[in-house]
Amino acid sequence: MGRHREFDVEQALDAALCVFWRKGYEGASYADLTAAAGVERPALYAAFGNKEELFRRVLARYSERYAAYVPAALKMPTAREVAEHIMAGAIELTTRSAEHAGCLGINGALAASDDAEDVRQILIAWRAEAEILLCQRFERAQEDGDLPKSAKPDVLAAYLMSVLHGMAVQAKAGFSREKLEAIAEQALSTWPSNP
Image (cartoon, rainbow, N blue to C red):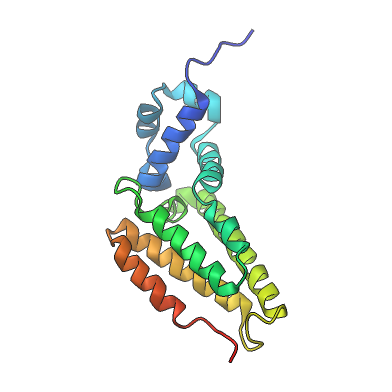
């Protein structure tokens, strides 16, 4: 009969999420993770495998709990409302707490060495998935006549993601919510519309 875990796996996962969000993947040491989770390293290994697997679980949890504004944005009636909603959600998320400023997905990859290439690729795929969903939504908007025929859905999706990533970096660097809102407003001022 296996030994009963002496800690709450869900709480440990939440604690690890906070550490990765604050310090990034490589900045988060095992000492940081075990201290935050309140467990010894062998218990952390037993519950989650290695650090990369723990990060994968954390990223999935982050997507589910903190990035729910993305699927909600995709349901907005117009392409512009999609962009407005996703930027507002990102601004709220990245500025809600000084301790967890920025985006876990961006913070996690900013200072990645060759040793963390697998995690960098995980984060690239995670961001690419969001861009694909935006592109598909903007293609539908164009088919519905919401976007002009001259609009390029793939470029719009890449543009929006670039603005979001830049705002996440600036939030981590201390930009205020008000400043990020002004940046979002500026970005939306170029949004294509039918004449």
